Image (cartoon, rainbow, N blue to C red; front, side, top):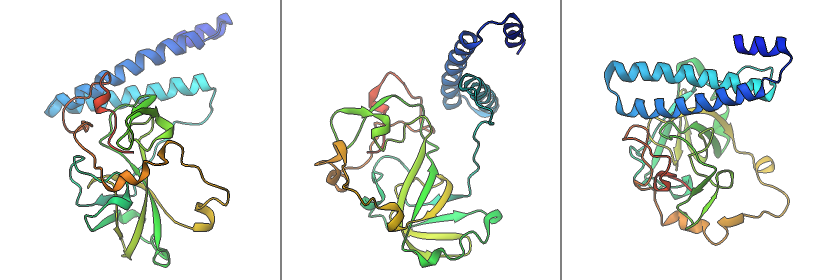
Amino acid sequence: MLKLLLAERAGSDPAPLLHAQASLLARAELALERQTRTAAEFERTLALWRLSVVRAALSFVEALLDRRTVEPVVYRPIGLVASAHTDLDGMPLQPIADTSGESRIEVFEAHRGCLDDLDGFSHLWVLSHLHETTGWDPAVPTFLDDTTHGTFATRSPRRPNPVGLSLARIVAVEELAVVVDGIDLLAGTPVLDLKPYVPLFDVPREDVRSGWFDGRAERVFRRRSDDRFAPRSRGAYDPSSTANATSST
């Protein structure tokens, strides 16, 4: 902050300083992520605390660079997924390929009443935080193709913000849970939001193109996630290895 104050008083551009600080914080974030996966007991607790501080600082510096006036975006889960999927190895790549049976989206007590009237819908969108994902790359390999694609042209969980989007069929709506048939999320996945599926809103009127998915999307019924993706809870992630790049389409 002192350097920023001095730069302002000197009438100099603070951008080079901010870019250098952002680069330093990004390297610290990666190092602390690795430490949280190898440390134990209090050392891991300390690493998690330091990681949260570094991420907050990085978000602040990025906001200054973007000249934003809003605070960093922070979400809290509204519930958790209870599914048969306990390991990424063998996971379906999309809800439509899930043959494990029914799963539950359990909503926290604080959100009692939010599920009212949802039983009138057949499907819902599940927005989730893919908590086992580590890091991201501009391009990733996928299970449905043999070449890499730009991250935003894939459904890979390894993205700058690991937000999951799943379309699930509603089986039953309880007071604090939704029973669904077909989900591509691990048990314990934090759920950020639920939204009803409405065809008029969610199906485009214009002709739809599927990009590189054309001729490959059907593979989703035959292929499953495997151990090429090392989850946060199982060992370290090597960002130089594309073998650990994705667990999805």
